[in-house]
Structure formats: C-alpha cells, structure tokens
Amino acid sequence: MATTLVTEIQRAQTRLRFLSRAERGALIIRILHELKTHRQEVLGNVPAERCMWIDRLIASVSSTIAEIANMQDVEFNRVLTEFEKLMATLQTISHPETSAKTVH
Image 1 (spheres, rainbow, N blue to C red):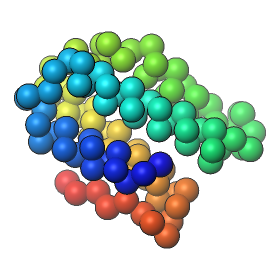
Image 2: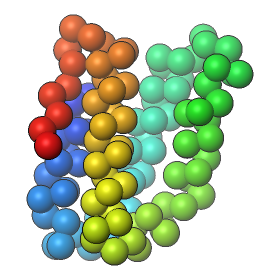
Image 3: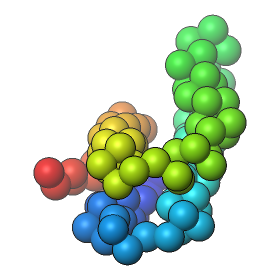
Image 4: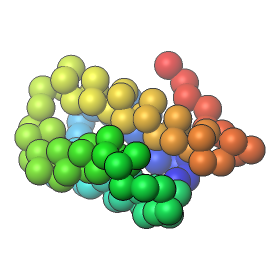
C-alpha cells in the first residue's frame, strides 16, 4: 500500500468542496482497491477468522460506495479522515521501515 494514497486522501480533503460525486466515488473505489490488495498480499496467509474485520469493511464499503460519495462535505471528510488513519496504520504495520506520515 503506497503512501501516495494517504497523500491523495489529504489532497482530496483540502479540495473537498470542489470534488464531484464521480471524483468522490473514484477515491472510495481506490481506497477499496487498496484494502483488497492489503487483504490479499499482506493477510493472504492469515486464517480467515482473524481477518473478519477487514472482510466486513471491504463488504460494507463495496455495498455503499454511492452513499459514501453522496455524503455531505462534513460527513465525507470524517470518512476520509478515518480512511486516512487506517491506511497509514496498515502501511506502518505491513512496512514499518517506510511508515507513512499522517498530517492532521
């Protein structure tokens, strides 16, 4: 998982008012893709019962992309903030030598 996604999320937060619904949806799809990649590449050999949290998150995000993209700016920003923290944490856990820096 590249630190570029965290940067992409941060950039989107600064331009939030100007993001179209399509751009918001594309960002959520990109986040979802990174979650799926992390699940396969990093957690692929971990027993399924220990990965239920990420499987549920992936399923939940997959089924609500349109609703997330249509959120009001404040709500969407909160979602992005939580994804930013999650992505930075997953990056740190899976690649501690190249940890992402999160700016708040």
